[in-house]
Image 1: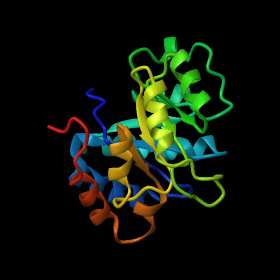
Image 2: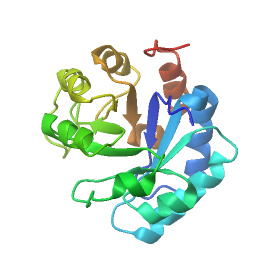
Image 3: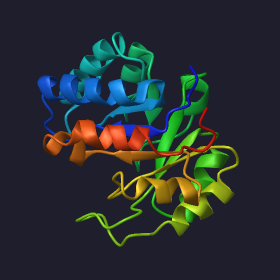
Image 4: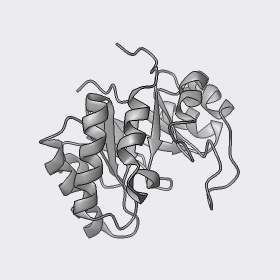
Length: 205
């Protein structure tokens, strides 16, 4: 796997199989191997399994990296990467996941340091911009600080980001940006993904 993703698509709560197929297909068509998708469901292991298995089936048709949120066994079963939510025990994860990537949230600069010490591969730095219920926006400077502290980890910017602000995230040092609700909320997803694909990514070939 290249791990060269520049856009991380995070699934919202209650997403249907139809919506997954539509939006992931649109994202993959625009972004190709620069796409990663994270199966994220809170509070229902069965629902997480449904979403993750659906994404695994879509991965057979589209080239994207797959992350599973908080379920090590499910990630192993699907040959996916692992996202470690806050509060999840971290002991032994690096050894268990072997060559798969491990990501985690970073709401503070100290979280980036902790992730690097744990041997993780990526941090989701958030909230960059204002998101209801997610606390104060940290601004683009949080990305730059995370990149300085990351020790080679991939820095993914999350929180209120769209095609008009993604370029600022890359300029601040982000290796990738994450989007969640907007692509699933209406008919504008193809335009969003096309705009993201047209940005000058760092190291773009």
